[in-house]
Length: 118
Length: 113
Image (cartoon, rainbow over all chains, first blue to last red; front, side, top):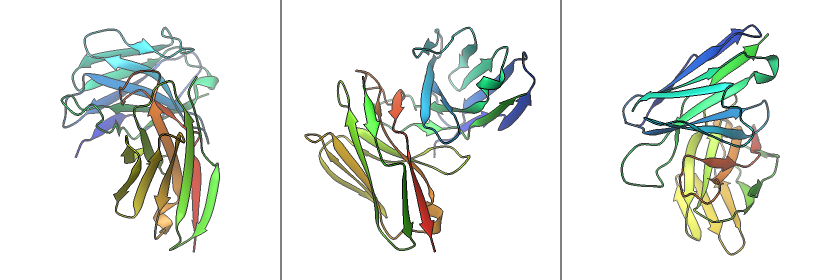
C-alpha cells in the first residue's frame, strides 16, 4: 500500500532555532504534497500545498517566510519552521496524493511530527 | 466560507452501533470523506461519498445526502480499538483537489467495555 514517511517523529528545540521536517512518499510519486498542522484536541488545518518544481502555495494566514517548503523531488517535501517560538509547538502532518489518474484517490498521511519549542 | 459540523464526542459500549453525523456548507461539492485518527497518530482514510447513498466497507459505512448537505459515518460492532477521533472532510474552495481538505472539528468516539 501507499506509504508516507515523515521524519522526525518528535523534536524539541529552543526558541529562535529552525527545525526541518521531511516527508517522503516511499512507494509512489507525488508531484503534490500537503502540510497540515494540528493543535491538541483540534482539527487538522491545511497550511500549504507543496509542488515539485514550483513554489509552494500557502493558505491564508500562514506565513511563507516562517514555514519554508521545498519539494526537491517527486518523493520528498520538506517543511522548515524558521525562528521557532513556543506558539509554533504543534503536531505537523504531511500528506501526499499519488500521481496518476483517479482524481479522488485518498490522501496518504505521514505519522506526523510533534514539535515542542521551549 | 465552508464549514463542517459534527458532534464533539460520542460514547458507546463494545458491540454497539454509533452514527457520527456531519453537516456541511460548501461553495461547490466534490464529495465527503471520512478519516480516523488515533491519539498521536496519523489520520487514515475510511470512506468517501461523491453521490447520494450508502457506501459500505466492512464494519464502517458512510452515507451522503447532497440535498440535505449531510452525511454520516456508521460504526458497527464497535470494538475497543475503534476509540479514536473521526473527521469528516471536504475539498477546500472550488477545487476538486483531494489534497486540499477542510476537516470538521472531529468526533471523539469512546468505546467502553
